Length: 186
Image: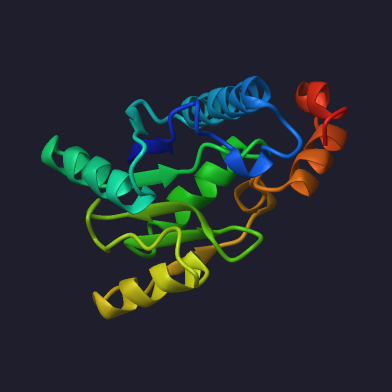
């Protein structure tokens, strides 16, 4: 089983794009609830090595540090999963792991073309390309190809639906009973 890493901004900075609809306490509560969900799903999927990569630097720098540390600790595979995936299921994680049997680079594409999860073998197989002007899933695929890997793309609703905008939050509050507390603000 891969080592899982969940990158997380400090809770005081989390979900800043929702500042127009949630105050700092609300954004923190939402971020904590989603992080708890993601960790629970990783455990349910059978991953025993789960690390939280916290930092207020650039996501690429934080992910790179976490990947290097995991590799130095003996990890062969790294499953990097974003913390804002409230629709994530253990079947989504199983799909990533299964795709990893066919390729050392597996990319879970977000609804906006970003990257919500990566499975890498070895953990430092490619340079991370998060938070760029270009959708990162395509950039991760280009970097994998340039490194000699044939990447696999995984498109599943639980991996695609992150929470970035007020519309995302409104849909979540409507769809998911555990997040209904946020419906009055979305």
